[in-house]
Amino acid sequence: MNDSQWQVARLDDIERRGRDIPVREHLGIHAFGINAYTPGEDGTLINEHDEAGSGQEELYIVLGGKATFEVDGEAIDAPPGTLVFVGPESRRKATGDGTVLAVGATPGEQASWCEKELPAARHRAFVVFRHTADAARPSLHLKLRRSTPVFQNHHSSLLRTCLPSQDAV
Image (cartoon, rainbow, N blue to C red):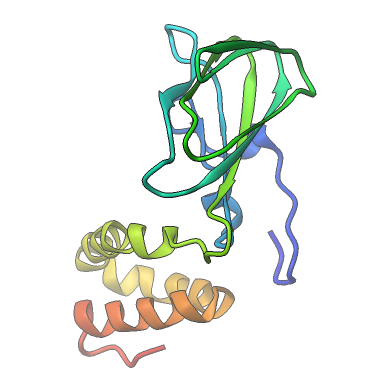
């Protein structure tokens, strides 16, 4: 990672969460969702779902291996390099032995994942700071200086709540 407006990462270098590869979180992307998925024990790559509630459009890119998508009941063979675009109302799922990159966003709306994840992030930070406040403070301040203004504001507020004796960043 660097301090500029760009980053480079390899999927193999991103810490996995089970079969999920949290690309968006690793790179700090806020404008759209993007994550990669590897198969579960049962071969599931993408769980069956639709995005009717969110209005989100999704693009799936098969990076390696092989996948079979099912969109609105229609099976789609998807070797590496296949792009599958799915609108919000369509039911979709994928199985196989490959790696799939999923990109999604709601047309005309700014992504709101930050706000949805903030309560959990605040709780995790609270626990860490209550137990390791003095040791963690310099590291957090460095990370805050490198983060976006939205996160700087939220984290500054969190610092004031968790560590009242610490000046806000």
